[in-house]
Image (cartoon, rainbow, N blue to C red):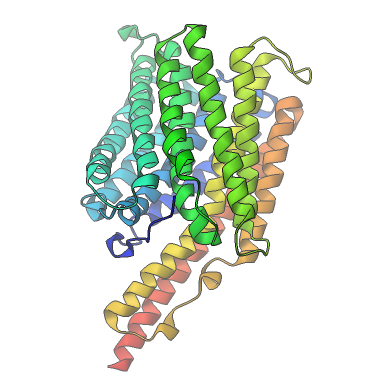
Length: 439
């Protein structure tokens, strides 16, 4: 599958995705502080209020925040048509999503029906508005069909995840409704992580890995097969409890994800830029964690009572979830932010130069927006936080250390994105001044 040329002329203004990128790291820091507060209990059980709150700080506050913000940029450049009314809708979606994610985490942590009700309403607005307009965008005929096809599947998974999440949230907020929300927990988590997160990273990766690394394209057969197999498997797991159906479905999901990780590693090994880069190492770390998480998750699904390395089943489940969320999804997100933010900043500044007829000499380089050294520091701190979090699953006494490192990890990210935003603003002003003086 050959990546299509990017339709950069369809990009919405940089101010549309930037608030998402600036806010997401703060949710990650809150998650780290939650681990510090909970200590040994942080990794004890998925059902504890603090664990549920931290999980949603990372998945909604960080992952969904960055992914939704990025889709405002990804959809127009891959499909040729952007999210309708992005300049107006972007701030609305951002405000509802950020407030809803924060209130949901507080509501789960404090078991507060009032906070949960407010969170459900805000998240329904955020994902309802964004989902409808994103669907309009991806259903239009455009270019970039192979990668965009996988992103369409990711949006279907997002709709199912949000629907189940709102249903469960209503059950928690209003116990009188009698909603057995715990029965939907596994399907909600699988569709959110294995559906939306995995499929979106796969779809974006099919485009950006060959583009940024000057590497050969992914095999077209892999692109066509893996996404549908993952989504079909998740749908089957959501509607059946028969082992005759569930085990093949789980096997198909695991095999597809692992095949993608192996293919990504091979594509990266064949890149033309041979020198080590932080983005390369971030993708490679993420693919290793994805393969381990899916292989382990398949083991846990098929043999739920099996003990590995002396760990009881519930801790193995926490281990595989940590590998997927922190090791795979957040590694890609943190790594991509150090690449995508300067790329978008440079692209928008370049367009501004052309629009006002300023000299290209006014443009900063991508290295001047976010340096490679800053990206290496980000990757090193994240790898340390990931290692400590995995260790804390085995030795819960490391819970506070994992929390402290997670807070530092996202603190570094917040610093990088904020510095990039400030440098973008200064450069934009400098371009306008240069254009004015040239007249």
